[in-house]
Length: 301
Image (cartoon, rainbow, N blue to C red):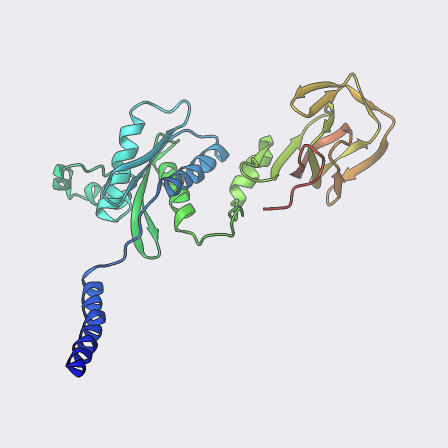
């Protein structure tokens, strides 16, 4: 009797893994898009839009085409919301960038426009993680259809790129043409959102005000031109122009030096500095590293 029981138990134990194996073969593991993931996609697209000084609506949908999150930048036309959702839904349901369908229709396959819930306009991109389509992102209202798509790609890449260490910022790349355009008028390449550093493509045609950044250390690299640069001393008629930023007419005391192409100078936070004279256009990179209010520089993260 006992031997029979032992046999039945052994047979049952052998059967359970076999049944589990059959079930596993019938059910696939699937990744899903979370609200945090959708927000990450939107944040990346919005950051890219602000870098380009453009507008737009960014919509993110899950793998079933259901809207998860949407953000509309100021000055974007109202219809952009529905259009961006349509682009995102089309991208995820057909698992293709929406430009593919715009090109197909433009080349003569016009019956495709009769499909239900179909927005064949450039600017929709599937979100792919580990080879699985988990959602879609659509952008409408930027400066051009091409820019709609580029912003959507920036958003999709934020989620489909490998995860970085907790708290780490993603790698940022600025094409040469964008850098040149920034230097042509002076602009911000990286605004510091979510980071303790910023990168400015700065340009000066004439002398400026004396400045003190209470939190930001400036690392300056001169690309062209030259200037008389004063550091240290005290600001004359200094006024707080924004939180922890002081501006004034000039500097009393301090150290005066000429800076020119190829020079690098660092100005620690809390140090007065002044472009006293500028000879011709002066272009220079400024990397601003922000300290905590107590004065300790944040660890890069």
